[in-house]
Image (cartoon, rainbow, N blue to C red; front, side, top):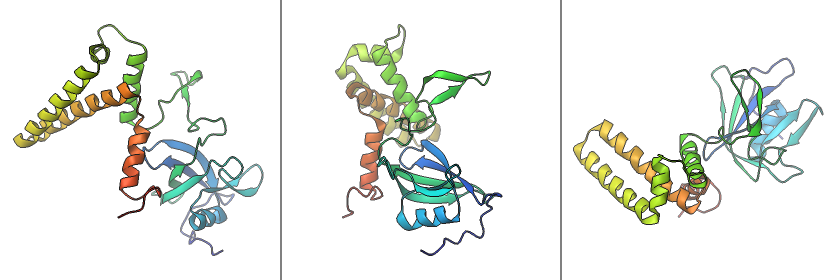
Length: 222
């Protein structure tokens, strides 16, 4: 197997680079590993993530025993050429604990590790908004706008989606960027209410979009 042209990379004294693995669909940081020149070359050749184990002193493929592999979409190097970013499609949970990603423990203001697991590090603002919506449905709160919408039922939620879609149209016709931003944010929120009502995860939406854009490997392009 030919070696990757890694002579421009700045390996540490052990010949390693940290590699951050990111879910290509929603940006979740799945894990951190280390790659040497051989691991980089193997990752590029096989399109599945390979690391160098610092404890076992050997090359290994992520998921080689569990089946929870990481299929490579794109690789990037940072501005200092000393850290790799891999955008990947995970098969099953990435963390050996069975969690989707390794970063599920929060640090409090004193730097202590919280005992309760959290998914707040997963995804971005969209996931955070949907988690709040789902929490309001499971744990209604007095005075909460989200709770009131759920109490109004399915039809009230759908009515708001239709109203906000109309507001987006009017904002777009008006041509004022700040109004478009405001109304689209409203439409997104109320659309997320529909997802929360039906228990649809954003990952399912991302996967569908991935199929349509031909990067997921799940649907051939027409």
